[in-house]
Amino acid sequence: MKILQICNKPPYPPHEGGSIAMHNITMGLLNAGHTVKVLAVSSFKNNTTKENLPDWYLKSTDYETVFVDLKVKPLDAFLNIFSNKSYHVERFISSAFTEKIIDILLLDKYDIIQLETLFLTPYIEEIRKYSDAKIVLRSHNIEHLIWERVAKECKFPLRRLYLKHLSKTLKNYELEALNKFDGIATISKKDGNFFKKNACVVPITNIAFGIDIEEYTYKFAQENVCLFHIGAMNWMPNQSGIKWFLHNVWHLIIDELPEATLSLAGRKMPNSFTKLKLQNIEILGEVENAKDFIQSKGIMIVPLFSGSGVRIKIIEAMALGKVVITTKIGAEGINYSHKENILIANTAEDFKFAVIEAVSDGNLRKKIAENARFLIETEHDNKKIIEKLLDFYNQLINN
Image 1 (cartoon, rainbow, N blue to C red):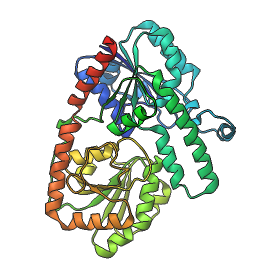
Image 2 (image 1 turned 60 degrees about the vertical axis):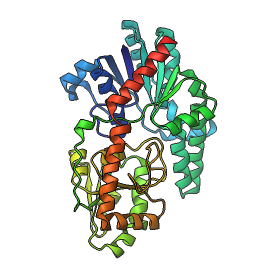
Image 3 (image 1 turned 30 degrees about the vertical axis):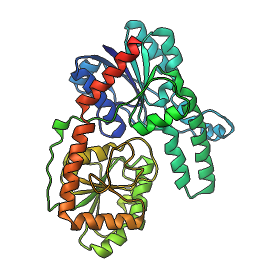
Image 4 (image 1 turned 120 degrees about the horizontal axis):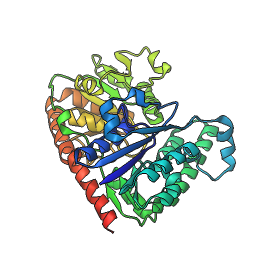
């Protein structure tokens, strides 16, 4: 099977959640013996050129990229208030990217064209003109839900009003776009059910985020109770969640557990965090190897109150046998059981008690770690997930 994978950002190197999710699909399809060509949007924020990539990746994916200026332009952003168009989507429209898609489709034929995220939907019309391939949306999130939740958490009236406008226009676009695809592969059952309830009639399948289990060595360390968080800190939900935790929860934990420590890691760590002088907190910023960092710690805290889809770093931590304490929103997309394979906390008091319980009860930590690893082996093994995706592809092609 020949697949053209069109990505909203470079999937390689896989340093953060979105790129990891796309890259794992790419490698899974290649390892299953199929041909995958990768075309990616490059931007100021995510600018990866061919010169920076290894030869094996370039050869195996026939990788190409087009630069698109995704910077938020103040005037355009302001004028969008008077428009019913989604500013999030409009930023991705590029004549150069359209031309590259056409060039690729004139040179070769594909069975499947997989669009990574809703933001590439504007290119469907041109794709239809030049290809008979089935077009599949790989939905990483319910995109508008992220912004609805961000708006709800915002404390500044004018900013909240603008965020509500962004989420409303994005929601309208997202729901209207669903039936333009030949199929949709959501990252969770919850997302798929949401689309079905909102008049989506095209075939939908749940393709969870998958990892190569063999690359994640389960190693439970009974004595390791170091708290940690890792995630891209230029993603607003991560940043606001950690800020909330530091100001509302950490002092409660220190009062009960003076010896407790917390390490914060992640790309684009804000200066406001690095300047903090809070007791027993280590601000690391981006680490060289995320898996090694996670493996060196014991208990992961993920205080998320906005966002959508699946938190990939939670999947990786569970695979490595770490106790994860997160909110219901943080655990979305994972088939979790509270106190069996994860700990759920939604308030400052919840987080305090969950941390105290996890630190104090070694048997609970061991049970959660073992069950977490089993859950990931069962439901997030990339080989099994790719088999399901290929079955979905074949059904679309045959029908």
